[in-house]
Structures are given as C-alpha cells and as structure tokens.
Image (cartoon, rainbow, N blue to C red; front, side, top):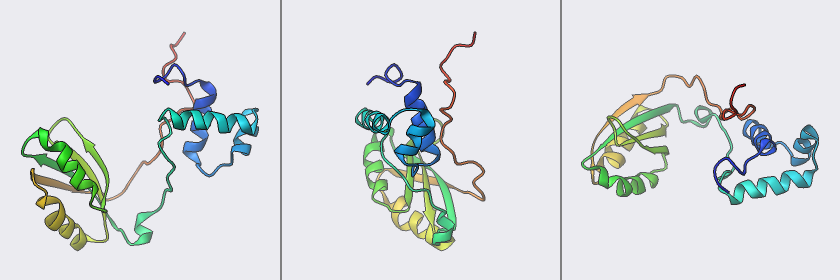
Length: 162
C-alpha cells in the first residue's frame, strides 16, 4: 500500500474513530459508518498489514502512577553517525518513552518520565550521560501538557479547495 492512494475516505473515518477511542467495538463503528462489522475488520487488517496501524496503546495519567516528572532532553552527540548506537542504548532505558532523530541544535530529542527530581538526576547521570557518544544533554521539565491528541482525520487535508 502506497502512502495515500490506497487509503480512502472510509479508512480515514475508521482511523479517526479509533484514534479517539481505541476501545470502540468494530460493530459500533460499523453502525456509525453504515457498513458491516466484517468490513471494519477487513479494513483494519489491511491498514495493519500496510504498517499504517502500528499498534494499540493505552493512554494513562502517569502522575497517578507516581511519575510526576515529564522531561524533554536535547541530546548532543559527538558525531551524527553515532545516532544508531546511541538510540539503541537509549531504548534500553525504561524511563525513555519517546525518541526522535532531529535537525537543529540537538541530534536527538527524547521524552522521559521519572518519579521525582532525584529519579531524573539518577537517570541523567547514571544512565543517559554514560552512553558512549553522548557529548551532553539539555533538560526541559514540562510543567503541564496542554495538548495530547491524534491528528484530525475527519477532513481530508489533501483535497484541493474548489
């Protein structure tokens, strides 16, 4: 399946519904979209096989689980060519929940979750900054998350306006 040509309006509608509520039963989606439950199953299987749907996630409030610090790290590498090795090592650290290879000031931008500032210091000092190739890091502590939502697929952003 190539990027957009094989994803039609029904696929987008199914994805939009499930991105807002991944627990919504296929039968309810089928009723909402006036198709059969089997159609939803077939479409989802097609989207999974094509790699459009990569998995299913549970969204939780990490602070209610004792993880009160959300921090973003700008990571400088000695050389950009060290990204693969550094990323592999960073993936082994449970507190690292998101990792991006970036342009700009940092080679890597990471999101980490920690219990408190002592835990953050331990993760930075004892784990992240000891990875070979990491030159230094800059830490940004999030005070509040204002937006966390999926992309809006309810309208086709690629349609030309008349």
